[in-house]
Image (cartoon, rainbow, N blue to C red):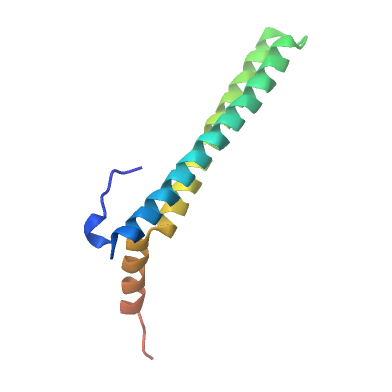
Amino acid sequence: MKNITHKNKFNNSEELDSFNELLIEIIDNVFKQKKDAHNHYFYLIQNLWNSKRSNAKEVKIAKYLIARLLRESHIILENSSRLAKRLCPCCNKQRESKVSLKKVLH
């Protein structure tokens, strides 16, 4: 995520504090989701190593599992980033002003 300070754009310090608390919850949730995903794939890899497949098949499946883990981690980060942006009061104000400018009269 970008390091952006919106201190000047918040109406009051309470709004800033509530948004910071919300961000803390989102970040905490990201760590929990990523930890759960990593634990799940670690379990799958352990079962793969204990299976009686050939080494070539094990390597192929392990590469696939790593790719899936990376994809899921990226999706978790993207979703949390979108959520934070959607809930940001500053971004909402900018979005509302842009929408009001785009009114089309026929």
